Length: 237
Length: 201
Image (tube, rainbow over all chains, first blue to last red; front, side, top):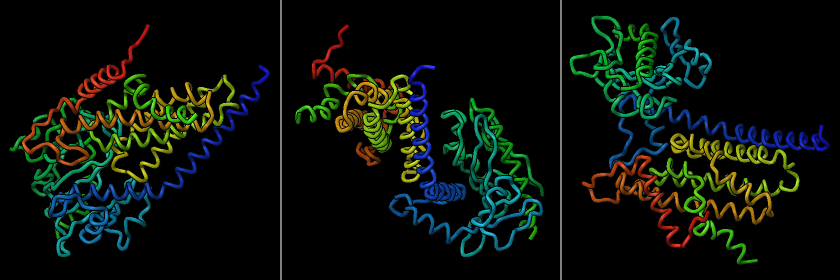
C-alpha cells in the first residue's frame, strides 16, 4: 500500500456518500410531482385513444386544467376483476393496488360517456416489443367490436423503426378496423399488407420493425381476450 | 482584475467559443437543435450543470487526491446531471420526454469535463463559476443560432410561431443531422474568419 492510499479511499467514500445522499434527496422530494405528471400523461393518452380533440375553438391545445376537467366530467373508470370479469363496485383507480394492476389481476376500464351514456370503452394495452415494454391504450366503439383508436405513451423501441408505433400514420390505421365478428373475438393482425381496405381485422406492420409489430399484435390480442368476459356481458345486455 | 473577470464571461462567447473554436459539445449541438424550445431547455440544463460542477470541483481542488481526480469529477458531474434530469421530469415533463436521453448525455459533454480539467482545478470558486457561466453562454449562443435556422427553414416556425408565409415548403434537410452539420460548419467558418482564428500545428 502506498502512503496516501487511506486518504484516497477516505476521500472517495466521502464523495460517494455525499453524492448518493444528494440523489436520494432529490429523487424522493420530486417523486410526487413526477408521479402526478405521469398520471396526467396517461390520461392524455386515454383521451388520444378515444380520439377526443384536445384543442379549444381557436386551435390551442387544452391546458392541464381543461384536460382534467374533461376527464372528470366525461370519463368513468371502473376496475375489473380479471378472474371473474366483473366490476369491483366502488373501487377507483386510486385505491386499486398498482401491483395487482401490473400483474393483470385487476384491470382498469375507461368509459367515455355522453349525457351519462357510455359511447366508447378504453383499456390499457402493454407488452414486449423488441427492446422494451410498450404501454398504450386501445379504445373500442360502443358496439365493442370496432376499434375507435389506439395510442402508445411509453416505449423504448428504435427511433425511426419500431419507435414509429406512436406516430400518427401507424395508430390512425386502427380506426374503424374490427376485432369481433360472428359472435366472437377475431385474432387481430399487424402484418405487411394488413392495411388494405378489404382486410377488416388487420393493419400494416412497420417496415424493418417486424418484431415490434408482432409484439403489438400479440399483446393487443392478449389484452383484448382479458377484457372479453366483461365485454360479453355488455354486448349481451 | 475587473477586465480579467469580464473576460471569463466574454471570451467563450466569441474568441474562445466552446463549439466554434474549441469544437467541443458538438454531439448535443447536432441532436437537440431541431426546435428552439428544446434547445433552450438543453441550454438551461447545461448552464446549471456546468456552473455548478465548475464551482464544486474548484471548491474541492485542494483536497482531491490527484490519482482519482477524474473519477471524482465524473461523479460530481453525473450527480448534477441526474438532478437536472429529475427536475425536468418534475417541472417540464413534455420536454423531458423528448430530451431525456440527451440530458443524460450531458455527463459525456466534453465541455463540462473539459472546463473542470482545464479551469476549475487551478482556479478559485468565483472565477470557476464565471468560467462555467461564460462557456455555457457561448454554447447556448451557438445552439440557439443553429436551432433558429433549423426551425425556421425546416418547419417554417420559430419557437412554435409561424414565421414563414403559408405555402412555404419546409426544407427537410434542415431537420436531419446533415443539415445541422452544414450549419455548424458554416458557423465555425464564419466565426473563425471574423476573429481571424487559425489553427496552428
